[in-house]
Amino acid sequence: MEKALIGKKLGMTQVFDEKGNVVPVTVIEAGPCPVVYLKTRENDGYEAVQLGFGDIRVKKVTKPLAGHFKKQGVAPRKTLREFKLAQDVKVGDVLKADLFEAGEKVDVVGTSKGKGTAGVVKRWHFSKLKESHGSGPVGRHGGSIGACSSPSRVYKGKKMSGRLGAERVTIQNLTVVKADGENNLLAIKGAVPGPKGGIVMISSAVKA
Image 1 (cartoon, rainbow, N blue to C red):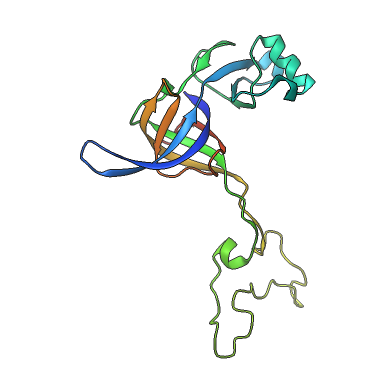
Image 2 (cartoon, rainbow, N blue to C red; image 1 turned 45 degrees about the vertical axis):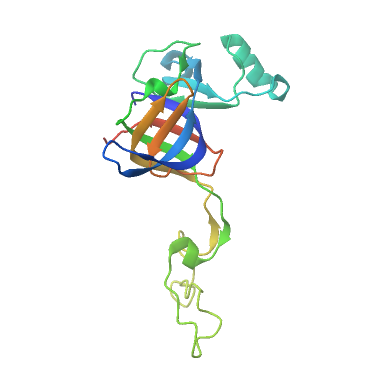
């Protein structure tokens, strides 16, 4: 990937484009992201750039991480993520929201909202039975799961009720509507995964 930043989702709003059309956007506090560490093939077995984001009190940093930050001469950061960047950077460089430009295509990765335990209708969009005239209290049940005489077991991956959400989600080819480097804000067209305050990763689109 060419560019990448770590950010925090602030919420959604709407802006007007040059034609007067309403554009729904997600506002993200993107950066500043200092380069904390450069991983090399000789030392780590692969190449990557480690970026930091968000302030944290020194007393809340674990001793191993405190030593890591101290060795690199970088102030402690709450969130660390690794990216394979095409651009040349060095430890201590700070990447800001103006790294991206309006009109640029990006991919956004985040953790979706956790919704707890859900049934098959909400989780997998199963069809419901009619809920009147004798169907009984099974209108939202999942039906047979295959544990009869054949195959006498439940196949792995069978769609059943269970935990919904709280998983890594990637939205591809979103458009940057506005990039404000002074206030470290990005306005991205459409919705991005996660709740308000959730950590997201913005990077150059791989399928643009």
